[in-house]
Amino acid sequence: MDCTLRPAEAGDSPHIMRMIRELAEYEKIPHFMKLTEEVLHRDGFGETPWFRCVVAELPEKSKSEAGVPFAGYALFVNSYSSWTGRTLHLEDLYVSPKFRGHGLGRRLMKKVAQEGVRSGCSHIHLSVLKWNTPAISLYHSLGAENLTEEPGYQVMIFPEEALRNMAIEDPQ
Image (cartoon, rainbow, N blue to C red):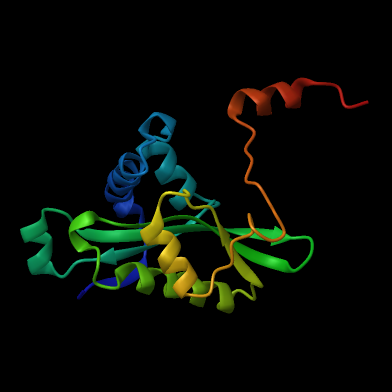
């Protein structure tokens, strides 16, 4: 796949948002989508970016044929482990269906790994749906370990309502 991997730029926001929607559809959970393009743009390209993103830009000829400028993206954030120090959290790794099977997901993961090494990170962590065997196979082939098996971690989330409820309670 003849794509150029590069850091996302502010003008890429609409295209990244389109791929985020595609990912939500692929994962069969579009009803969880609350993010807007404006918020994505602000959070990724504002004064204090909350995430980093790498896009897989198609060559000019392929852009016009495909009707889109990107074949995929990886979105990740800095994180911290109280056991090992600096880490990266991979929020999304996505390759559009017509571009899958050519090693682009692997290339995007390697780009994120390079960012992690450059930043002095001890590891990358991520969540993957248990039915997404292509992604699980990719991650395993790159050396990922499943922490639900050993030591038995479970991924949890405090949704916005629970977050707001906790924030107003008096901790005394």
